[in-house]
Amino acid sequence: MANDNKNDGLFHWNFDLQETDSDFTDIDYSANAIDVSAEGQEIKPLIFVDGNYKSGQTAPEQAAKEQPEYKEVSPKKKSSLGQKAGALLHKKKKDDLDYYDDQERYSEPKEKRPIPWKPIIIGGAILLAALIGLIIILVSRDHRKKVWAKNEDPAIEELVNKYFKAKTDADADAMEKIVVPEETVNSLEMTLQAKAYESYNDIRIYTYPGLKKTETGLFVTYNSKFWNIDTQLPTIGWYYVKQDSEKNLRLMSLTDKDTPEYKYIVSTYDGSTVEKLSNEVTAANKKAVEDDPILKKYLAQLATNNYETYVPETTEAPTTKAPVVTEPTTTEYIPEGPIGYVYGVEGSVLRMRSSMTTEEDNVIAAFPEGYALEIIEELDGWVHVKDTLNKDGEGNPQSPSGKDGYVSADFFRAE
Image (tube, rainbow, N blue to C red; front, top):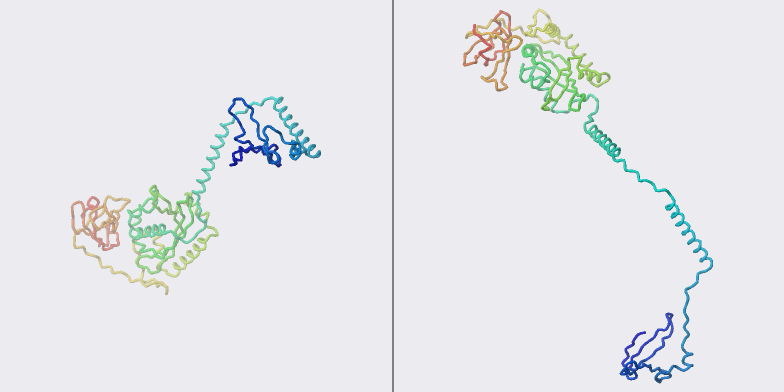
């Protein structure tokens, strides 16, 4: 029912008598026709019939007939087939619910098993340790190609060059910083070798991955130049590079066949590039010796550990390829100052230095026990000497270098 709020002095109400779409019955209540002064007085509506208002009257039958008859509309019925399908579906759902209810009601309660945390933790720890170990192996693995190849590492090249320079200069102090700590540096032997070998030329280096990631095997070829002999001797050398405790590169000579480094490098030789190079250098070495009888004789002399300068005999005619060596003068040198001798350094050498200090790398020569030197001046703790004498204190020949420097007064005595 709703108020239309008409402006004709009436309260106009619309009554929707049915929920279906139909005509409305309008009943207008006149504000003037409703008397509400008496409490409890019955309010009678003015019914509008045929254009007139009649108080308390109902509409004539004709008017009533004109009003549509309203009936309650029942919900739309489903077809019989749909009803049957719905009934079956409902029954199935109910049966399923009943089944699960029975299962839950009559089944024995299961005890909850505790979670096995200990095996899980142990297994996880083992798996994690294995994973970490695998990562460490992959990171530390040496991925270098296992093959002999020409060296491309500047640090190795520098190390080898320092090694041969120390040999040429007979610098035992420098050599101790180059070779592995286990290798003994013989100063006397270095000094004697320096009297035979003038230089080492045409050095070529080939490398092979070592037993460890920080190690490298070396195959080195070079030409040995001897004093007073022009023919150079093709030579090969086997070495091994390691790191010391301060991660400095050190050189190891592969001469001891019992070391694991020697056995390892030997195992890489057959069929390798260096096998072919070694054969080529060996053939060139043999040819140089056979073509130069002076070199051949000198090498035989060196084989007896006699490193004194070899003076070729002029009566032996060299081959056309051998150099002609002029015999040096035999005029004995007469010293201007007193003569002194090295003593107290048996098995070692006395070093000659360019200045009066041991704090610098200033060694310029080294002399064995009994070596004779000319004294220029005696100083506080030092002796200024010159290497000019041809014979030592026993009358044995020695090969002077002409160098002058300073030796310790503790190991040098005057005549």
